Structure formats: structure tokens, C-alpha cells
Picture (tube, rainbow, N blue to C red):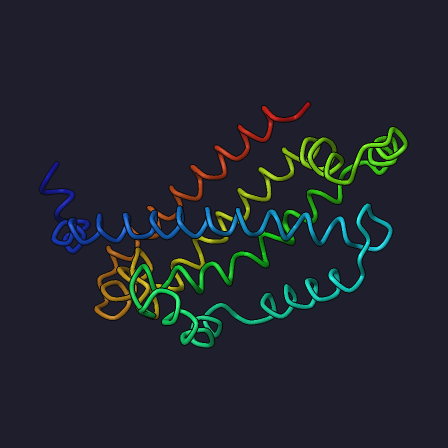
Length: 226
């Protein structure tokens, strides 16, 4: 069995330690970027929803500014965004390479996407429930927590799932410019040195990560449906 494995993936066997290190780096970037993006993105998503025209805290000025900023960052291809914000990245974390250097552009690339996902989830709330809460004298803060947040939990989980899966692609892309992780591992050996078995194994690991995230997201979302 060992001989068979060594025969079909010889380069992977020889770089097991580096593959494990790359996997850990990918999971670190996924966890840190996901946590930061969730905390900032969920707040901004509520702001853009409740300040839109006709909503409980209508403020067209704030809504317009936020909407334009989100569209600006979403319109920039991620590979260009990495280079564009290098000065910001260095100012914040002291380097533009490695896991630390990848976190900043990943956050800038993920938050606008996550906000739109959350905006869609919050927009699915029945307006009748909001109007009923207003008629009972519920404050805007009360409506945000008791109506918007409570009723949109399944949609929020679906949005988080989609965002995490999208982040896997961004993290792999960050590896192309020295961000580390599985993307960097696959490019250095699989692409530059034509070690195809490394490319195949890396893809299989990424597919496994995406499958686990999607499965967990589906299970949790179904459990949260009222």
C-alpha cells in the first residue's frame, strides 16, 4: 500500500510537512478573515438596510456613501486589490507577504461581498412583521434585534456559508502573490515545477474543505428554520 501511494503521489509524500503547514496557514486565514469580516460586515449590513429609503432609520446620505464604497471595492478584481492596498497592508501589519500580509486584502475583498449577502438575507424579512412591531411602539433598536436579526438567522447562515466558500478561492489567489497557504503550495510546486500530483492533491483538499463548510451550513440553516 505504501509503495502504491508513493508511486501515484511521490512529490506529495516528500513534502508532507510543507503540505500540512500550508493547510494550517489556509485555515488560519479562513478563520481570522472570516471572524473580522463577520463582525464588521454584519454591522455595516444592518446600517445599509435600516438607512435605505422607507426603512426604520432612513438616511439617504449614509446609505449612498456606504453603497458607493461597497460597489467600489466589489468592482476591483481581487488580484489587483492585493497590489492596490499594499501600503495600507504594510501600515497595519508591517508586511505585505505571508499570512499576516494576506489577511488585510482578504478582509477588504471579503467584507463588501459579505455585506451584500447579509443585505439580501435581511431584505427577505416580511415588511408586515416590521410594520406590526412599529405599530406596537417597538424602538428601531428593538426592531433590529427582535425582527431583523431573529427572523433572518437562516438567511444569515446561508450568507456566511457562501462567503466562507468564496474566501477559499480568494485565499488560494492570495497564495499567488506570496500569501502562503495551499494556493502558494500548489503554484510553487504544481505549476512552476510541473509536479502534477501536488496540484491534484491540493485541489482535492480544497474540495473537501468546501464540502465540509457547505454541509455544515446546510445542516445549521435547516435547524434554524422556524
